[in-house]
Length: 145
Ligand SMILES: [Zn+2]
Image (cartoon, rainbow, N blue to C red; front, side, top):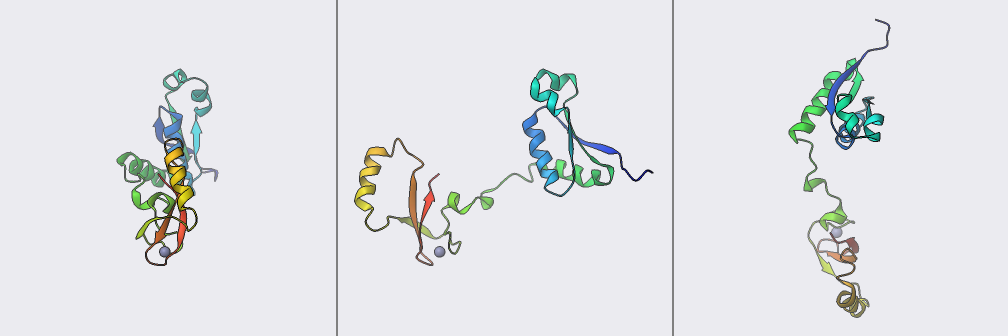
């Protein structure tokens, strides 16, 4: 042994997008990962088949851990769930985290809001709204989804 471990291929992908997701997943565990051929495939999709896809390679001592991450990804075990959504997406209170919130209109904005809703709702479907927390009373703007 020279002290420098050989790279082990832990996964092969046809698309850069999928390779990038898994690469980030492995890097997120603190494992250095190298994506082979990604430059070539990025230039032309046809290269993907020609060069055997994009190979993700990690140092040999991390091969088992990285392979487990790849297996988990392919099993869908790491798919993002609603529980991971940010408060703005769930309507949860940004102050206390309670999900017992209700639509609210800040004082003084009601007339304007009605006008805005009538005139612009179709044009700005993601405009800011407010929600009031039933636990702590905080009224906060949320991005409607
Ligand atoms: Zn709250």
